[in-house]
Length: 359
Ligand code: NAP
Ligand code: ZN
Ligand code: ZN
Image (tube, rainbow, N blue to C red; front, side):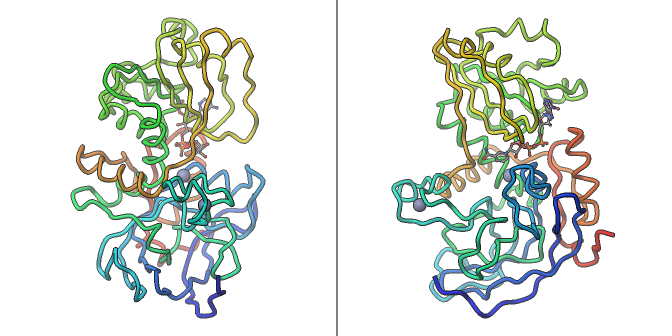
């Protein structure tokens, strides 16, 4: 791909080191080429992956890091070959901005499993500029139309942003493992991803059991749609659910005991890990051998499936429960996220970036 020479300076928020706070930065965005869409960003959700990357917890961060992959905005310009969007339309961008488009997975709409690797919305090599990709904590972004999603008109815009990662990351495994009526589904870790998993699994018709370490979320999980809630640090409560679930989605961001959850599966049951803690999670052989249990993983979702998820949410009137913050509140929001103190997703009002300094 040709390296683009024409760029525009854009204000962003990011970090220059793993132990530094996020602050105001200037980045370059390419001019919209033939298939590109330029989007003025209105809202950007705050995913725990943003924090893992900003602090180099997955050991691949190249600084500066400008996080943000739950982006909703308005199209300001389109390239002359673009057919899906026009200036003025609402548009959204999730975790991917490119992939090879030729491998078997790209061809079947599984761009997230692209064999040479997809281009992440942030902290990946930028094929156009030769730098890194920078995410949605910024005024605008330029993305190929294939990776831009249509935003349903009936949903609150700020609360739609988290669907672009938290929504699709939970929707995709719920669909893949055929969650629906007659299925008993566990959701572990009621944060950004977990609270979306509860809403989506319920809308798909499953019986949903929420597992939380936070007593304060015990009743709230029912409001989100859980049929039952379990305080996972109480062994007596956990014992009652042994062998009772067909499927579990595990959205915990930190160390926890997987064996305790494998015990809760029925024969042939599956746990899909979507949470990505910094360190390995030990699993005993005898947690999976009796009962022919599976421990699986799942990564975000393909572009067509992301659109399907947005349309499903529009039909079922599902959005994220959010706390709208200003750009200057991002460092405090990260600290609160680490304490599990978020109901249930921070979303940045990008209009506030204009005057933000991070000081
Ligand atoms: P989040 O909002 O911070 O939620 C994580 C939840 O995990 C917390 O609310 C808490 O739930 C639970 N938790 C936190 N620390 C814990 C501990 N020490 N022990 C037990 N439970 C704990 O994070 P998120 O944005 O939903 O992301 C969750 C994870 O998914 C992150 O690791 C993120 O990087 C990963 N992720 C993966 C993908 C993918 O494609 N697979 C996509 C996006 C994000 P309770 O208070 O209910 O216990
Ligand atoms: Zn994410
Ligand atoms: Zn590919």
